[in-house]
Length: 317
Ligand code: DON
Image 1 (cartoon, rainbow, N blue to C red):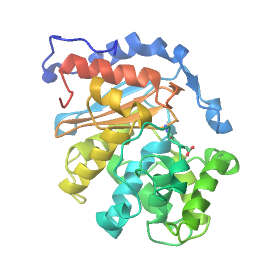
Image 2: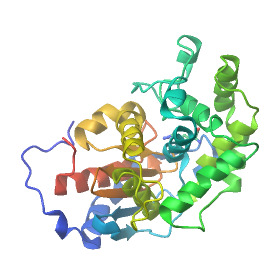
Image 3: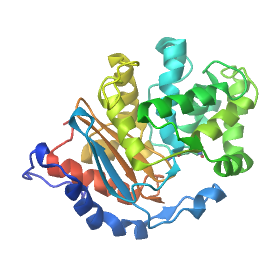
């Protein structure tokens, strides 16, 4: 807990500027040297470890950017919050959570041995529950994936967003552990479809976007599913509560508890190096730096979030 500073003076949020973000970014830039770019999916290992970006969408949807603002990366596990929203809006929360838990966890994102005992995934944020969640979205073939992609495009108001076919192929050809979970859940009667449903999970993980896009996603869930420009097509306070509560208890995997203590905000990380953060009712934060800690969370990304949170006293607690 060396990162906690007690009795700190905090600044007024109206002073937030791109300068604030770039000052924090420069301070935390070198954290990438202490971590490692994910290479268990070969295509991910090709990311430039030095790339770094920091975005905030604040009051009235105002956007602040610093660093490599045009750098795209794959959203990976951050796509799980979008899939959760779609599955719950189609099937209802009770039907989705009849098949999995609301649990936090002390286990890494690819843990699944409890599928042999309780038979159900712990939550929709770890891989098992996320693969199951995507399988619950209706439609044949790649339709469920296209719904996820369309929702990401809507929330970010960025129609150019697409998925990386090379990352997708790389995930598909090396994702044997995910394939194992898929068939174990099919065996348990939780999944009814064919392997197209697993492909949709691999595709959603391969959606490419920027830190600004992540900040817009964070803003959306922080504001009752209202878009940064005020579009209220999907406005739903309960959905925002559900998604943010899962982000808080499981969004950073087994680091979620310590993260709740130090940052204290609903957040979701991905092994592509992105983290999206919701400051309920106030703002969204998006960070990117591909070098990860042992839990699969962006190291410099975590420190940038932590510094911003301390500076403006943004923790919920
Ligand atoms: O399932 C996987 O292995 C990846 N495509 C996504 C995992 C992920 O992002 C975990 N996050 N930190």
